[in-house]
Image (cartoon, rainbow, N blue to C red; front, top):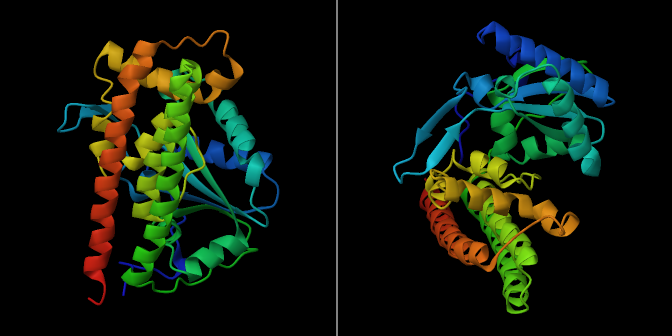
Length: 310
């Protein structure tokens, strides 16, 4: 059975951020106020991730063993619990909060904010099922705001057989999505329509990177930004960053083109310039990404298999 280390009674969740620097405390207090203003019926706001664990990195850049640049700039990860989850409006609300949070600050002073919005019913269901993304968020988190209206469920232990089953389902579903988007790419390349080729390759890359987090954490991010997704995946494996090293001007340009393609290939076609040479440079990168994701995910699923019955 999977054992949650140091699992506390959720009534005893940490509530103090005194262990963090004054500037970070000011940021978190401001964000808590903004979240309460922008989101109705907030019952809890929980800081989780590296800042809650006091393992964060600020304005620090290193290279991985493959020579690619890995940016270790931790985000403020906030779990917002309310009666109803935000759903489709979550992106708009998060954008407003980010914009208001950044007002009056220099760009290098602004720590990126990532919100996870869940209804109390879905959160408690996830805890009862032992979904370890949520269990870790609660177990390691710091309660920044609490109306006292909601009570969190005690998590149920989840065995590795179930973890493997869920991870396999996520892997099969997301990997198939990537294959289908690559088929669209091949069709657009034959026309040719290089702008939509860039969009297709973005979709392939997005699906593949999301597959890693789904297999490792059993959690799916809603973001489409490839930089954000790579940042979230590097905690599980640095292998993906080696596909997009961004350590030369050309590597940076190609990655930014792929990153921008999600919106600009559809909504700014007139000004979005993509050449055959760009696509021919990006295609092998995405193919390499597919190979890397397949390898690291299968290794992780094999690890789950090895733990069954222990």
